[in-house]
Image 1: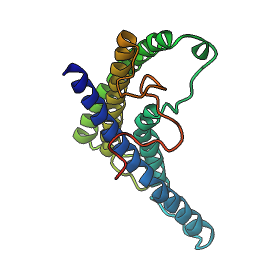
Image 2: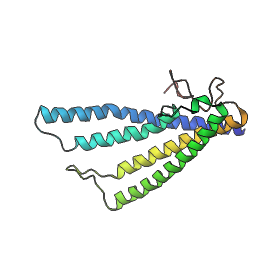
Image 3: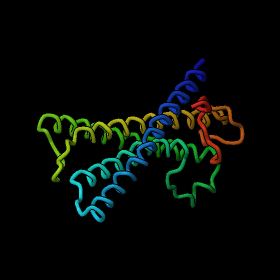
Image 4: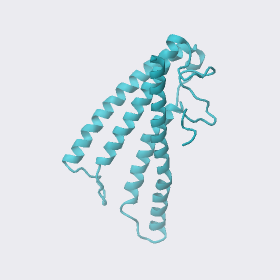
Length: 195
């Protein structure tokens, strides 16, 4: 029963993080269009826009921050593997647990700070210091969503590593891999094949 609850939690987190990361990837063509339009407007029409730089800056921030949890899910972040690859799977799990705990603490601090900045942005109508001067409130909402998704992904990874540490089996039921690590080729989270 407890294993099924943990497995369900991990599956739910995987789906949510996948949808957030996929949604962020949809912003990439919009970023390319904004930059392309600014170049066209500046060099062909001779009339640069006042909004393209701010839009491209925000879109890049959204893509990078909202895609971070999906990168963690796929184990695609940069890692120092000198010692990590030479130790046993149980020691890797211990190292992961320590790393995840630190990351969750850091992300919780950023989440709280982002909420404070969001409240300030609403109360004092903070705007970006540019000619277009867009509001900054949406940026802090995005930071809260990104930190929340990251924390959820880390808690899922933490549960999977704890389960492996105590049982030496993968929570997701994959015998050849542990700690939720998925094959890098054709990765799709469980239940997301039809999305």
